[in-house]
Image (cartoon, rainbow, N blue to C red):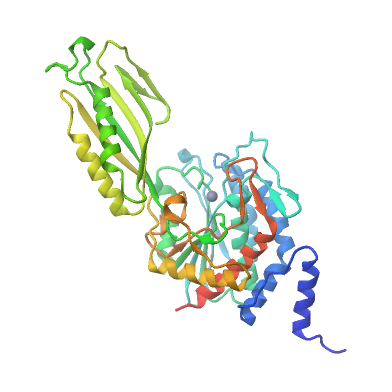
Amino acid sequence: MTAMPMRHLLAATTLSLSLAMPAIAEDGLNAEEQAIVAAVEADFDAQIAFLEKIVNINSDTRNPAGVRKVGAVFNEEFKALGFETGWISMPEEMDRGGHFVARHMGDGGKKALLIGHLDTVFPLASPFQKFERDGNRITGPGIADMKAGDAIVLYALKALKTAGHLDRGSYTVFFTGDEESTGKPLDISRKDLIDAGKWSDFALNFEGSTEGMAVIGRRGSSGWSLTTSGVRAHSSGVFSERVGAGAIFEASRILHRFYNEVQGEHGLTFNPGVIAGGTFVEEGENTAAQNAYGKDNVVAQKAVVHGGLRFMSEEQKERARAKMREIVAANLPQTGAEITFEDSYPAMQESDANRAMLATLSDINVALGEGPLTAYPPEKRGAADASFVAPHTPTMDGLGGYGGGGHTPEEWLDLEKQKFATARAAVLLYRLMRQD
Ligand SMILES: [Zn+2]
């Protein structure tokens, strides 16, 4: 019996798969990388079956049991892959499912943090619950955002193991259970993720991919609350020395000056989302619900405004806040005002290290038959878990599935690009783990 040359074996494998789907180009890849891509292709049917399984488990952020169920499916797979696995529980009152963590320690080398999230925005009551395939297109809740990305992490690591490269460096896989509605306080719900970021040499997040782009910078977001006070009196006395302007004029003054004087820097935006004022303002269950009572002939005693602030860097955030505080302090007669700020997501600032990772990814994109990549405009991309680790480690995001319609019942995934994205992630890890 004559042994079939390796080249033919590979060609035969590719041929049988190509009946369903064109094979991935691999012109710029070395032999080891080609073997990694072949491993991704050979395992692709299994990946889709796995994806179907996890998409069909409801894991709304507010369904902690469902989040844990999806985590348990990953737990089995990562254990089988030789990872040490664990579950980080959140305090009862936080009402979140917790986070899945899997670790594999290689012999020296780089330390990679791979981020995903298990939760989706679709409640148990939503009619959108099932994985459905129609040719190259799959629809399903959370499929692009971001169960496809989670599956890419798993199957890229499987391919690295098959090809014999998993022990080159160490991995922490961190899938949060509350990305879509982050558990508060953040210093509890994001502590372990941030610690993993500090441990790592680089972090990759697998939120949805965009054609021609990857994310190496994104704005941070935070909240602010303004409360103004005035002298409650008959409206006939407004503007008098004793009564002054009232709480609502004071709030208007402040917002008007915010609009005129804080605006302007690239990437800086702020928006008052809700306002309530009058004789009494009662806060509802959360800041979105405000109850106001007032009369047209009574000078307002209180006004409350809640808003958001997005920024490109911590310096920009602090600069904006300083201006806002200064404006708030210049009160109209007989009024008072106070503003408080709440941090939410830090900014993920573009750095040379981030740009270097993007360049590596872009090379691989080209080697796999696609075009080169540019950085996603930071001011256009929403916040995500990658932002929490970005201040501590080089970070890149947008490596997950290709699709669209996130957070809607039309959410979909491109099947063919899923294979590409998995191969790309595996080759990326192979290259990043051997860079000095
Ligand atoms: Zn997401």
